Amino acid sequence: MSLADKVAAIFEGPQAARIHFRLGRLEVSPQRLRGVGAAIRKGRIKIEVAKTGKLLSAAYHPHGDTLTLGDDKLASVSSRAAVLHEGIHALVDMYKCKEVTVLNDEAAAYLAEAIFLRASHSWINGGAAEMAIYNAADQVAKAHDLYSRRGVKLSTDDVADLRAAIHKHPAYSGIGLKQKTSGHGLHAH
Ligand SMILES: [Zn+2]
Image 1: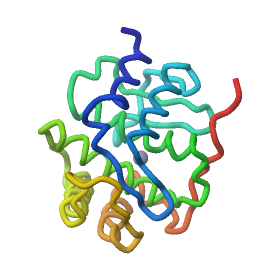
Image 2: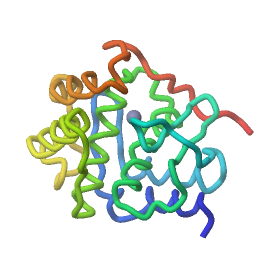
Image 3: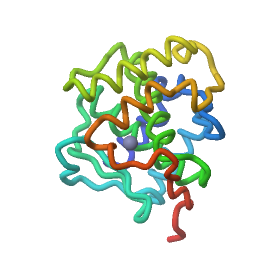
Image 4: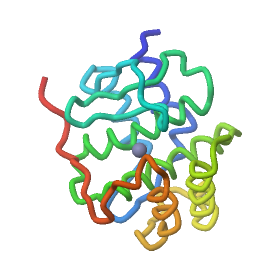
C-alpha cells in the first residue's frame, strides 16, 4: 500500500464514519472526510514525511495543499488520530470554509480526534497543556453526545472551554480570537 493509500484509509475507515457534527457553519461529516481521503488518493492533497516540530506530530499547509507526517509508519492510534486532526484542516481548506475561525477549526479538529480515539478504544497520554485540550474535547463530546449521535449542531459558546484550553497551549497562543482560516480551496494542478 502506498503512503497516500495508507493515509486515505484513515478517512475512509469505520472510526471516521462516526464523526459527524457541525460547529457553527463548519460541517464535519463522513462524506466530507471521505472526500479528503479521495483527494489524498488522487494527489490533490499531497503527503510528505518531515519533522513537524516538537509540539505537534503532524501538520497541514494550505498553501501547498500538503499534509506533513512525523513518520510514515502510522502504527499507533495516536499517530492516525493526529493525521485525522490535520485532515480536518484540509477539509476546511478543500470545502472553502472561509468564514471559520482558526480557533473553531482547531476545536473541530480536536473534537474529531476525540471521536476517532474513543471509536478506536484509545486515548492520549501527554503533557498538562495537551491533556487540558483533550479533556475539554471529551467534555464537549460527552455533554452533546457526539460519541453516539450524528449531525449534532454546536455553537461557538458550546466549545468555549475547549477554545480556551487550545488558546492556552503554547502551540496556539499566538492565534487571534477572531482570526479566520485560509479556506481558499485546493489549488488546480
Ligand atoms: Zn490543528
